[in-house]
Length: 177
Image 1 (cartoon, rainbow, N blue to C red):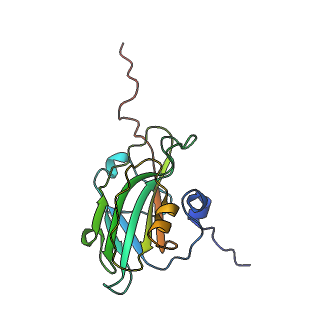
Image 2 (image 1 turned 135 degrees about the vertical axis):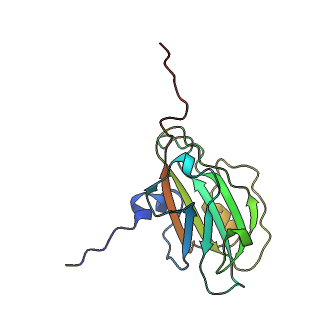
Image 3 (image 1 turned 30 degrees about the horizontal axis):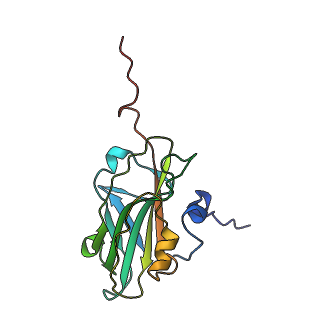
């Protein structure tokens, strides 16, 4: 009997907390240095200080994409009252290129989780055409679904996430004897 592998986006509740079910329709490759982001991989805050390289698939430079990066677990996974926190927003990315060819609407903010393990989600939407996208007035309580509806983006065409938690050697309570 053939067993179908569970979708990691469903298992990690990215589908549900951030996105509705969708069909992957474009390649999305996210890399921090030499480390490619695969669903559920763990990256340390020190590995994600600088914005990643993001390559967008597709087969036509005249097709444009929008990339959203959010943290649905802010300020903590047990009490995500800032769900979702916007970490990066790039629009008008031509197909077959990367984010460097798009328009950065909201600059990259490095992940700095303080409590628990946070999911950081990259979501790619295909735009109906090249368009003007306004920066939201805030980062906390951003809503990917509402944003997609506002700009007529429809369902995502790709998504990937990584887990990140505070590094044990960065701050915290110090005990001096």
